[in-house]
Image: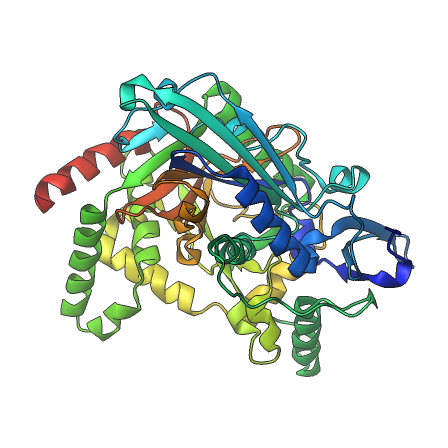
Length: 483
């Protein structure tokens, strides 16, 4: 079959929100019971990526008129050549059974499975490699584990979905998974329309440009975002300080990825109790506006800083939230936008002493109120900071910065693999991989729920962390209360 002509492509531009993560590959992993049908998996992947053509694209760089590099996605539109790969699918068989890595039932805290079980070594970790190898944008790796004598000779499978974080965010990855699950089940799903050939516009960039123009037309140079620490230009010294912190935690204190399990009964008890306490307050009519996510983040902060840190230390939490809903009125297509569209929520910084003076319901309310104030000026403020290569989600004046990423609402962890032979999902994992293996510590990923309602979180910190110890003690205490 003849190759595609230049007119058979669309060229879709990425934004600064994507460029921030050009050296990061995000990996979602599912540990499932049994084995899967690789042929059925490959067929579903082929169908999804051939229908949803941007997934079959390739990263491409061009030089603009100012000789700056602009990154775009080259999207094939016509009939695809037989040798054109629309996805990457690899498999391996591990010599060790599951019990070599973890015990079942899952403990409250365990070390995350090695990411090598979920990703092939050839998967790129930066834009330049995605481009130079012409690598497909979605990468899938399956590792079959042998029968486990310690678990009734059951077999388990690791399924990994890797992609450039500079291409898709959590909402985008979840949309891809929903389409894939529908395809595996033989169900209909809404296929996004093909873009027009040639250079196309990015709807997020269009919406941002319009918002900035509207703001400038109002004649005010002030975004009125005082106290907001979203994506911030740290400068060279600030960036070096941040990197040094993470290097110290990783190599001197032994920080690693650990999976934390929040049991369903404990979570229900906690959320119901907090909402009931909030309803008892004079302003408690808005208790229903406090989400499970607000409560979990408040819980995380209270657990991390319950002891062991000076009361005078200033802490800041950057909880990353999607801003798509702020732009859908002007551009409905933003609701289906699969690229990066999130900023840190406008949380207040506070001292450890102030944090610990709040009860858990009070802190949940503070975070919920702050979340509700997210507005276009916050997005513009972060966007402006991203013009710098030293932008980072942080408060430069804080003693410690905590980053939280909560994708539980997207339900990506609950993806159903049964149509291709898998049993239940035992656990899910999230990994953020970089070319130099830099581990971003003081980070919490709320990955989602398992089929029993338990919430899975990944925490990056040293093994002797006071927060880990406190977490186990408090969960045990709550479990006793629930019983």
